[in-house]
Structure formats: structure tokens, C-alpha cells
Image 1 (cartoon, rainbow, N blue to C red):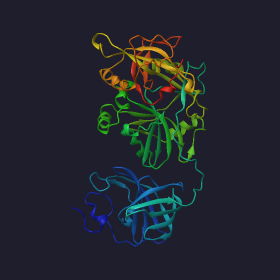
Image 2 (tube, rainbow, N blue to C red):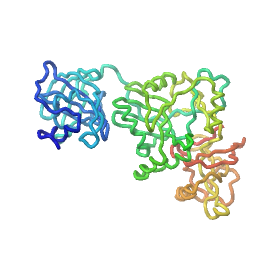
Image 3 (cartoon, rainbow, N blue to C red):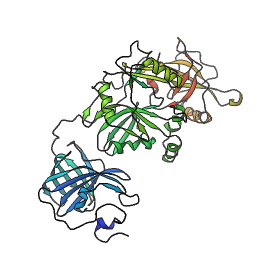
Image 4 (cartoon, one colour):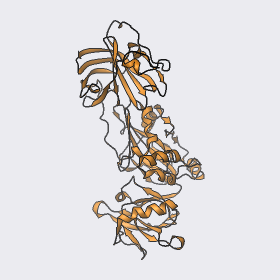
Length: 478
């Protein structure tokens, strides 16, 4: 049963919640106090409370207190809280109003410069927060914004625009592995995570926003809290044997319907494997050496049900490659410890060493099947681009006739049908006479036993479609 009283009391059952009951208490002498509480409820947000006329006047700030004067952030005016709430931390039980974890993020005193009906101007003097701020109404009683007026004491690098990830060059193991970080090559989809207070966006290497497709990863924002950071990593689906499975990831890559995503999230969960840190709390780190970026990343202690930041090794690359082959992993990545981050570049500072022949290839057509697949998809005709820009030519690389699941045999024709064309998109090559041609827009991941000197794939197996790379960027890796 709810206690009688004002709005604060009417929303709470004090027999259940540990939140403080209001008591008549005089304001402490000295400057008025404030608190910012990080509130992990149905959605993560921050509660700003200012001591004023015997109560804690309160606003919920979904994206945290801004540090940049060029940014206004939403602040939702809520009911006044008792002054005892300025010291409250604890767990509000599920089912209660505001159920979730409350922790004090910052507290201190503030200097009030103006307190009007629709505007409050004040200066923080907290453990984390300082500076002059304004709260101002933008609509009804609840609709407010918070804005920093003065510049921060320390200059901050701007939060980065979306970046194309740095890429690795296919290579053998270097003769000497000193000075290299050695990591597992994850068989997934590359994604950069842009984390700001209460928000997380995932973008692939062609800058597609896939945040809604992986809701389990979005909860990483709760661990990040009020910090600004940009993370680089790979979205990976692990099989029952604990190994990365690109085929399993296929059940998530192309799904956008919320009901399907929620269902597949349970049957085909995805883990965000984090291996780089590009921005942290106002500091752009791409010019920092890889070793330093990893030290900062490890210091964050990121780990949760759907994300991890595994450590790297130094040295012993040959032994680790042999171990990865024994475990049937795709291979290793080697990164120079002193290398800077080069967005969109494939430099010799990052190397990929493969146990298994894998290549992205562009679908330019298909051939009908025989036997039980007669009249249906039999093989894909694939190729790769050579040359730059509009002058690039699609070279024929052979047929892929194995590796298809029953789902693939249903979904691939549906994806190919709208792309049909009469002429071959390939520049040369001995293409089968019975071929049906399509516009070269879809990218397939192909595993093969051999890649000939002429660039032909032998004994290729289809592993799935990729939508994280434009077809025009697919070239042959040797």
C-alpha cells in the first residue's frame, strides 16, 4: 500500500523499496548540494538533483550531463525528492517505480546564479563535475534541456564521425615475431561501437548501422556508463563447440524484423569481441601505438554476457598458429605493437595469417542444378574486381556448388531474382553456357581448398552472404 503524501510518496511503497521516507529536516548550512545518480532501470539514465527550498528538485537526463557547450541534452523534470535522497544508493526492487540500481555518479555543492520558473543557471563544484550550466524549459512542465555554458577546463577532441575500420593484409607469418601482438582471427562481422552516455551504435565497415539487429550487445552501454568511447571489434556467433561459426552468424546478419531478431537472439546469440579502443573521454587515440590503446582498453575491464575483450599474446606466433589450426580456427591476426590506427587502410602493420582458404567474392550469376536440385540453384558464379573506380573489371573466379543449406537454397534465388540481367557482368573467363546472370551486387564468403595462379577458386564452399562490404571493394587476396 502506498504511503499518503505528495507525488514522491504516492509512487512508492516504503515497506518494499529502500528509498528514504521524507522527513522534515533543515537544510545544511553552506552552499546548496547536488547529486547525479546513475540509474540503471528499464533504460540507463542519470538523475540530477539540486537542493532548493527544502527539497531535491529533480531531472532525469537520459544521455548524461553534457561536457561540450555545443550540445544540448534532454532533461525530464520529475517530482521533487526529499533531501535524504541526495545520499541514496541502492537497489529498487523490480516492479517498484524506477526499479533498478541507483549509484551516486557525482556529488558536491553548486552555486545558484538564477532560479526562475523556466530557467535555472548554476555552477557545479563536484568531484567530477565543474563548470557553469543552464537548465531551461522547452515545452510543458516536464520538457527541459541542459546545456553547458562555459568551455571545459581541458580541451577535448571531438567525438569522431563514423570510421571505416583499419584492415589487415593477407601474409605469411613474419620471420621474427618480436614486436607483434598475436590474436585469434575471429570469423564474424567487423563492427565499430560508438558509445556515449545511454547510447550505443554499431556500424559495419561499410558504415551500415546494425544496432537494432544485435540488441544483446546494446546492453554494453550500461557497463560503459557515462563515458564516451569508440571500440573496434567483431560480431561473432559461437557454435556449440565454442568455435566461431560464420554459418551460424548468417541467422542474424540479414534479420531486421524485431520479432525475428528477439527470437534469434535466444537461439543464435552473438558476442561482440572487442580488440581496440579508438577514443576515450575526449581523447582521440588513433595516433597512439596499438600497445597503448590495448592497455587503456584492458583498464576498462569490459566483459559481460554478450561482449568480451580477450587479451593478446606477444611472440610464439608459430606455435599459436599451429594451435589455432588444430582447433580448426580460421587463423591469426598479427598487429605491430607500435602501429597507429589507419582507418580504411590495409597496411603491413596488421597481417592476417590463415589456416583455411577464405575469400570474399562477388556473385555475378548462377547455374541450375542437376538431380534433386534440377530446376533450382546448382552453383553460384563468382568473381572479384581488378582496377580502380569506374574502370574496375569483374574477373571470373569459378563456380561454387557446395556448402548450401536448405535455407540458402530458398533464400538465395529470392535475393538474386531482382538482380537478373541478360549479359555477363564478367570480363572474360570461361563462363558456363547455361548461366543466368545477375548484377554484381551480392558478396559471398567462400571457403576453398585451392586458389590457382590465374585467380580461380577450386573446391569452393559457400559460407554465407556478407552485407558489411560493398561489392566494388572486393578484390583478390593472395
